[in-house]
Amino acid sequence: MSKLRFLCADGVWRERSIAASAWAVTGPVGNGTSTALEALFYVVGLNKGDVAVMPPVKALKELEARCTIGGVSWSISRTTAGNTVVFREAGGTSRRVEAFSATGRSGKRTAGDFLLELLGIADARRGTARLGLPQLARAMYLQEATIATHYLGGLGAEERKLLFDVLLGLRDQELQRLEDEHTAAESAYSKTSRLLSQLLKQRKERDLDEPEVIIAEQERKQAQLKEARGRLEAQKKKLSDIAAQRGRLDLALQQARQAEKAARAACDLAGREVTATEADLADTRGYLRGLKRRSAQRDSCSECRKPLPERPEGHCRQCAQPGEGRTGPAVEELAEAAARIEAATLVAKLRRGQQAEAALLARQASDATQEAERARDRHDRDVWQPQHQCVLEAETLVGGLDGELVQLKWRLKEVENILDLTAEKETLGKQRTQARETLTVAQHERETRRKERIQLWSQHFLARVQTVLPGVERARIDPDAYTTVIGHTVFEDSSVAGGERILRNVCALLALRDVAREVPSAPIPSLLVVDFPVYGSDTNETDRHTGTRLLGQLVDAARDGHGQVLLAARALPPSTHDRVRCLALSPTHHFFDHAPRSSDQDG
Image (cartoon, rainbow, N blue to C red; front, side, top):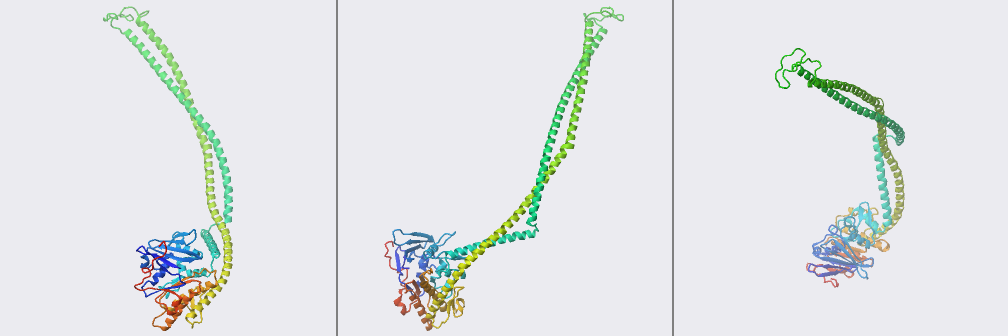
């Protein structure tokens, strides 16, 4: 870290140079010593909860940190009104510019993710634990609020294990890949195993048949279905032939009905003709009777209309001549009427004969129609209906067998699923075993390196503790929890909040950086920021001497050229003044308000 620039509310850029390997900001409590350090982590993407964004920081418009990461100079800026962090590569012909959100959503990369990438720290996760900038900051930044009470700021156990596995070089992308493959294989095997167990349990609870029984039942039903379909086709063909015969009977019946209708129409016509002829004959006879009455009973002259005198019997009353041999209009009319009667009688006789013949034909046609109906009804009753019933029964049998085969198909599908799941479980079991064996080999190799590096870390930790507390004989890093053990007590079992816990936090991280000098491949960040109060009570001479030695350890750790140490304290012992660049704050000299104007052209 070389410089912190900030744009104040008055529109003026100011800056603080922090390029020294050991740099400290001092001043009484409440004068912004912690704020200066927190601003550095706020710039790179940490938010409230990871660092407390204090009012002086929020009052700024923009902050910019200048630093060197992996041999490349970067400027990292962030506006306090926004949530975006911008990385700009300094120098070179093509300056790289990257912008990221400080907080990520939906799996998007964040500023912290990009910073870890620049530091050479690969993405790492184990179960629910994930290594991000908030977790990495616990190994770079000891805050005043927790240094005397929480180990590494209260980092969770799983997150702590994952963090130091990565920083000690015990976890790489290959190991992550093997763990992911093993987790995926374990998950796939467990999922298939659970599903198979559920299906087997359900079949047992429903008392279902074994697969062999279902397969045999299916084969038997399929044979029955094939036979039933053959019978159905034969019955349908027979019914089709019977239906053709029935069609012919229907046609004959239709023709007989049409013939009967025609015969009845002819009979009705003949009856009407007979009636008309008989009516004509009756009219003629009546006319003749009228002529005879008029001839026999004339009582007035046909010429003058005067009453005729009485004549002897048989003589005409008008001419007095006898009736025999008479001629005249009356005689002619009588003769004509008699002739008409004779003709009408002959016609009536003819018409009655025709009527009788037509009536006979109508009866014969009716008999033929009735016979055709009886023939069709007998055919329906004795042939068509029984055959139709046979077809219905055959169709019912085929439908029933189809339904049973559908049920068997579903039962077989369930069995096939069980067989497939069994085979899949066996395959997945082999894959799981192979993934576990491969991972075990890699973990064994890593465990060997892990023991070596934790032992190295423990050696440096003991050395650091003994430098501060010469009377300590045993101090180490717990290989399982990565916490500190001094004597027989771990961090949680140490004394009440205060100096001893500060000692454990500081010495653990100083020892970790000692490991980095001996193991260059370990991606341990070279920056250490420590913000803490006085080691113990100001009235306790022993604690003052202990605190002085601890500060000396921090200052010395930055003078070997392998990293940078930034401190915040109320004051530094005189013995450290020649080894650290110090910025003293006071109620009248604030970190942001009284900083020099920026000398950069873009400021």
